[in-house]
Image (cartoon, rainbow, N blue to C red):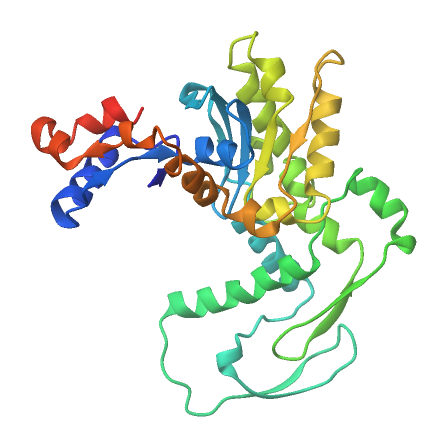
Length: 312
């Protein structure tokens, strides 16, 4: 099983107890997700940048072990982009309507009031379900439209006339062609102090490049060059067009000229999203893996505390 690098001791022991006592597994092993992501990309030492739904983290991995003391996190991630999409739609004065509420809709011109009818005899749903369905539309909108500017947002605004538009139609028929807006939705990831951030105080948040640099700076000086030359990029947000290029550009600008920055990224979208799973399959296929895991007998002899000894 994988676990986040910041997982606490009590939870590690609890999951070990559950697997042996409740699910009666014959053997068990717990590994840090960052280590597995590094293995999935063929690296034993790497600086793993994982940008998912709830947070973006930078975790140094050295010789297959997490340097947990140098782990840095920020909430600027996928849910943040979804929230930015929601604020953008509010500014346009368009309500995001989930499909379960819509009976019919009509085609309308771009950025005009949608024409749709509400479904009759709607079943009562909880607020959490309605919010979930609304966010699903915003997530789909972000995946379809949002892009990361490979230079800077100001450059994109100055050349907005040459930016190809991306069209999107919402379930209620509202349609729009996004140009420079698609870059504004993601700019907050790389520029936490940007005026384009809506709904949050970005000044107290670490941007992506600063997360990586802060993490590397907390490691030993001798290890830093190796980490910077093996920056492994994983997570759903890394699939945004322009994401790796912008991160590479920002890191190259903010690190000394003597530092060689190299990003490692899998070309397959599936492998980048599920790199811990792939790294786990690689680790489990090694001939030495059977010497690493916790057997049922070892658990019965030592109890749940053995996880801290055998799964560092």
